[in-house]
Length: 82
Image (spheres, rainbow, N blue to C red):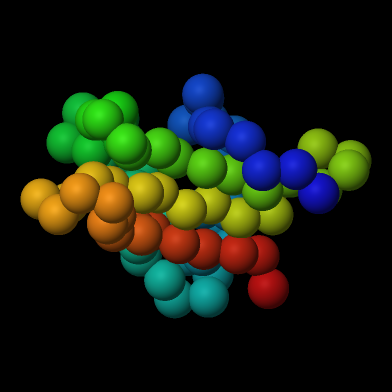
């Protein structure tokens, strides 16, 4: 498994489908916010990460947003395939 910064939001489609099937809407919100520019995890100390299996299948996603307190971040839109 590898963990890397997400560069293309389109890689999240399989996760999005799985989350919706499970009744979770936060991955839909992540995609919508990213596409609209509301939250792209591009601020200082922010990042949107994905976990990939060896066969390149995306297993999970997690965003990190900065907070007003130095050294403290907020995990956002965390989802892992069942």
